[in-house]
Each structure stands twice: as structure tokens, then as C-alpha cells.
Length: 326
Image (cartoon, rainbow, N blue to C red; front, side, top):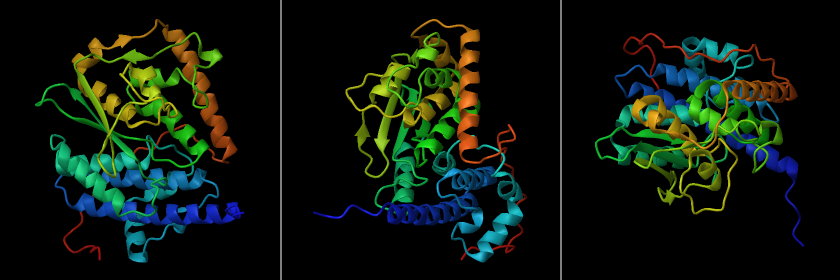
């Protein structure tokens, strides 16, 4: 009979993959930021803070010093993005790290160049650590648009966290701060632990039905195969699903993609149908409940939240040859 894997060895292996992926992800984001004429330094700042925060709430936790970055790069980052190093243990990120990677690639490839976005995401993931992309990497991307070849594409990725509590924290934070209010309302209708609505939230159902003229398609990032919506996405957005699989609410790539669609396309927002009636008071009660749950999960991790979300900063352009990446 084969011996069971040693849990301690598994934890050490996971920790090592996280550290290596964190270093590679940070370095690639710095390189990509230099390849675009747009000011994408806020995305680098944001990804630093988000990674450092996740390192803080993972088990076992570790500080930014535990990430394998060479000394020259570390000094550059500490000098250029000091707030990310200072505030990762007191402020919450708006979103998980790979969402920043996605935005960087869309900036470089152009939102209209769907195949190039897919290809660059695929290449990015393939060069990172581990056969299973469970540390800081997303497995799925989604594209939402009005069903017309000339309409804008709105990209999203699945939640790039590892561990039950980290995922709960990021979904709750995204609902309260980041996602479009209609998308957040749909996710808030469900508890992350169960397949059904919580009894305490039975008086609030913010689930929606997207218009028929919307394309919302998800793909596996590693091989670009089409992925049908899971049952959770059917519940949240009225998407036609043939999959019995149900991922935790708020973790699918469709959520971020649909949120960006609704933030950008006002005519789509106006056509959204609510699957039930609810009041502003009932929604406020649910938001308060989720915030209390979020605070409880943070206390569980010994995280002292100051009640604020991190705001990424731009840095001044470097003078030529100020810093060279080897």
C-alpha cells in the first residue's frame, strides 16, 4: 500500500511554488510595463501589493523578503513602489494578482486583438512554476461583448488565489469594492460555502439575466479550449449552461468579464433583467453581513485591516539607463 503524501512536504512544496511564481510574475510585469507607451506602472504597484497581501494571509505566511527576487530588482521595487511594501499588512487589494496581469496584456495587445490577448496569456502562464496553476495564476479567461464583430471586448480571469480563506477574502473584497454593483449583487446573493442561497439572505436575490445579444465565452488559458458556463454562472447571470459542475460563487472568469462589460456598456446595463425583486435595505443588510464575515476572516489570519483598500500609484518615468533589467 502506497504511503500517503506527507502534509508537511506538500505545504513546503506549495510554499516554494508560490514564492517562485510570485518572483516571476513580478519580474514579468515590470518587463511588460516597459514595453508599452502607456503608463502601466499602477498595475505593477497593484500586483505587488496584491501578491504581498496574499503572502500575508496564506498559511504559512511570509513577507515580501521571502520572494526570490535578486537584490538589484528588490531595491528598484522598494524605491519605486514603497507604498506596496508599507501597506500590504493593513489595506486590502481591490482584486487578485492575475487580474492585473490580464489588464497589462490587454494594454499591450489591444482589447480588439482577441487572439493576441489569448496567446500572450497562454505564454505567460506556461513559463510560470508548477504543472497545476494554483498559485497566483488563473486557469480561465472570459470575453464578454455585445454580439457584434466591431464591439469592444471585455476580459476577465478566474480568481487567482489558493486556499479557502484567501478566496473568501478576495471575493468579499471584490463584491464590496471592485465589481459592478449588479455583478456584486448577484454574487452577494450566495454564500461561498454552499450551493444554495443562505437562509439569512433569503430576502435578497440580486441575480440577473443578461440580454440575449451578449456573447460571454470562457476559455482555458493553457490550451485555449472553450469552457461552458458552470451552474453557478447560470444562477448568477442566467447564462445557458450544460455543465453540472458548480464552482464557488464569484471565482469564475465570467464574473470579472461581465463586471467590466456592465461598467463600460451603459445600454447593456439598461437591458439587464432582475431575476427577483429586492429592496435597497435588504441589499445593505447583506453587504453589512458580508463585511462582518470579511473582518472575521481577516482576524482569523491576524490581519489588522485599517478599513481601506489599496490605491496603486504611478511612478515617474526613469531616465535612460537609470536601471537596466538583466
